[in-house]
Each structure stands twice: as C-alpha cells, then as structure tokens.
Image (cartoon, rainbow, N blue to C red):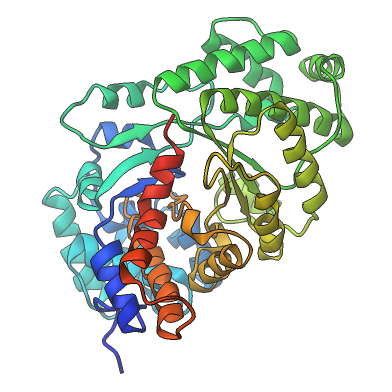
Length: 464
C-alpha cells in the first residue's frame, strides 16, 4: 500500500515522477480566472480560524456538507466556528473520491504542515495547529507568495471602480500582478428586473447618461478602456445556453429602450440584444488583444427556496443539458466576420467536450498558436476523471501542447494547491503515454510541453 498522499501522490510511473518533480513542480502560477476579493489582498487579511479560511463562502464545501446530512446551522448558520469545522472534518472523511478530499489534504499539507488525514478524531488537534499557524501570520499575501503565484485575474463588473487593483499596482512591496477581468454579465441581462438600475450605475461609472444603444456602447467602451489601463487582459462571460439571433442596431436600440421603461421582453428579444452586444464587445476585445472567456452550461439557482434564504452562489446550481453546437458555431462565425478575439471555451456538461474540442479547429489562426482554447475542466468537472477526459479530448482532437492549463475559479486563497493537483494529473497522463511507448521517450520535449501547459501558454496568450 502506498503512503497517504506522499510526494508521489497521483504519479504512477517513473516518467510521471520525473515530469512532475523536474519540470512541473516549481512552475509559477497564473490564476487567470478566479473570484477572490481583491480588497482582502490589499488589506493582507488575517484569519482567526480555519473555519473562516475554508467555509466562508465556499459553496463546494457547503454542498458536500448538505449531502452528508449536516444541518444548515453548521454550514451557513450561526453555529460556533469550531463546531462548523468538526462538521466539515466529518464530511471530508466521508468524501472519498470527491476532489474536496484531495484538495483539503493538500491545503493542510502545503499551508499548515499537517500530513495526517482529517476526520472527527484528528479534527481537534488539527484545529489547534492550523489556527496557531494562522495566528502566527499566515495572511492572504503570504498564501499567495508561498504558492508561487505571479498573476491573479479577479472577476470584475464594468461599473467597479477597481480601487484596490489600483492601490496594489502602486504597492511595489507586493510583486504579484493582480489584474481585473471584464465581466459585463449585468449589462447583457436585459430581462433582469434590476437592469435599469444597473445601467444607471454603469453610466455613472463611465461619466455619462445611458439612454439608448449608442450610449450603452460608449459606456462599455469607456469602461473597457479603463480596465485595459489597469492591466486587464481577459474578459469573462457566463451563460446557461449560447445566445444567437440576428439583429441590427435599430432593433437592439428598441429592445433596450423598452427594457429601460420596465416593459416585459421575450426570450427571442433577449437573444437579439445579447448577440449584438456580445458581437460588439468581442470586436473591442479583438482590437485590444484581450482574451475572451465563455463559460457555457450551468443551470443556476435550481432550489428556489434555499436561494431565497441564502442568495445566489450558495450551492444550488447544477449541470444543464441544452444543445450548444449550432448556436456556438454561428456565434463564433459571426465574431470571425468582425474580428474574433483570442477565445477560451468552457463547458459545464462533459457531453459537450467534443463540441468544443472540434470547434477550435474551425477558427484557428495560423499566425497565433493556441488562439482558440478548450478551457480546463470546469466546476463540476475539476476532478481527476474530468481533467483526464478534458485533456484526452483536447489531445485527440487538437493540440494539448497549446493548452492554457489550470485555474482555480475559486473565492478562497487556499485554493492554489489545485494547480498542484492538476499538474500531477497532467504529468501522470503524459507519463503513462511515455511508459506505454505511445509517444517518443523525449523527456526534455515532454518536460517543455508540461511547463508550457502549466504556465507558459497562458502567459503568452495574455500578452498584448
């Protein structure tokens, strides 16, 4: 029996071990899509307990705890911090096969020097040791620096003032790039009851009054210029399905004016508005050399009662199963006619892996390797099997060597060991092909491929 999560964890061959320990292990991290609160980096937040670090806002953990029969009081309720931690420890011990089991223990090892398994019996001692490390000064910035993070791309609304990004840019003592990402979901959500209020806030941020399509375009262009000046290199869009419907600016203007007047719109009208606005934004991204990310396929807020109680992003979303191939192809083709930006496509439903894997080749650019990307296994797929399936699909249909690799998609500053988890899985996959004689035993070439996927490809893609 192998030791529990030792230095060769997930590495099943000599080739895999060499690839990981020699080439992958010490590569820097570019977390090009996450949801961390930048204010916490600026303030270099300190933590009182491991509960605060782990269970505050982490819907992955909340969802697992509910599945394990933990009462909501011990998850998002008013129970004491230690009781919540003990409840999570009981959940982790039962979560064999779930990536939380591995992520939790990697975090204990890397940040707290704790190598024993977490369960109800070990929880009290682990609680004391981890809290002691936190009290001794394991702050947000120290976690980032200790993890060898070079770049963080937060997720930011166009109306945000980016004050903490600006202050971090001026802080020469902190060597990590903290860059904004442009996520205009609220500007696209024309059927949302809060649309008019949001448009007013966006206009205020841009210094103009938005009353029509032209002023909306001007406001978004203004804010994108500001984000660009603050170092923004990526945009991000999320939708349950791919919206595609032909529309001209006169139609979009009429739809928008009706929305601002509080009129009810139909779904086809929403799709017309969204399509044209996405086309407009994509042309701006292309002009600025930015990377556009499209996250496709979640079914949001399925449990209405719990969403009313706790709000969005609290663990009540799931995988959608809508057809995306035809609208995605037509949408990307429409962008290609205007100027297709560098693009990363993510799908939440693994049934769509081959859709995305084959879509890349339709819009590849001979002048820029890796312009079209099949993004890393996302959300419900960022476990071992999901990562292997995504990378194998990409290798079968495209160029694994050009892949931009892992990201955290997380709100937690202890999530960086997910990069280690991914890198071990990547090295084991390529190492298995080498050991089986399926690829040439050229360790230097494969080592360079690993390093490119770990860091170099995304760093290159994000350059101007």
